[in-house]
Amino acid sequence: MGINFCAIDAEAFTATTQKKGWRWKRIRYCPALNLKKEYLQAKRLDWELLKLWSQLGLVCLKYLDESGCYCTSPTDYAYGRRGKQKRIRQNRRRGRRINIFGIWEPKVRFDYTLMVGTLKTPTYVQLMECLAQTAATRLLETGQITVIIHDNASVHKSSLARQQHQRWQQQGLYVFFLPPYSPQMNRIEDEWLHLKRDELAGQVFEDEYELA
Image 1 (cartoon, rainbow, N blue to C red):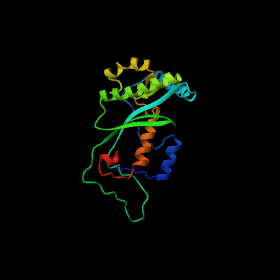
Image 2: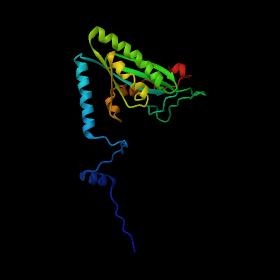
Image 3: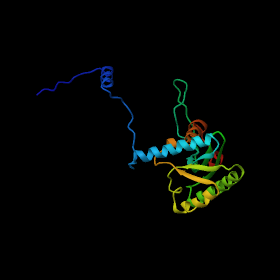
Image 4: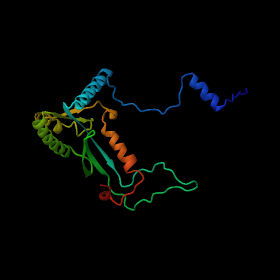
């Protein structure tokens, strides 16, 4: 029995699929956690309200997150002369990863600390203690409370950290947890993207101290 093959032009195939409502798109991974739409909507509304209060000067809104960089940034696309390939010579010693603990208050200031190694819960609590002292001073001088946006990292939600929440609130510092897998609501993520894509891209540092 013979097999009949049907030849079709690529452009015609694309036009046909588009007419039928199909598009060639990248597949996106979805979180395994099945969150209720009502919960996500309520969290987003709370976040929008916090932003509004911040614009009105009623609260001090900050964003907290951790990120990391290596001495050799990932190679990316760049313009170059035809027939020539741009190269970045690597160091013999790669260097250790520098982790960044950042707190961003949009259009006001960006505070950060650097460390080698993973952020541990005691260190996180110690850094939050410093922020709580700053929040207490702000509350005393202006009457503003400070709200810090957090993601759901394990150090943020550890039992040791949660034990401090009530005391931090008495100092005027409140923690607002985002829904899981919601990086688009943690605006500090845009700052990390700018740092890695625009400031560090295409560079090689001698060691982690130069990178820092």
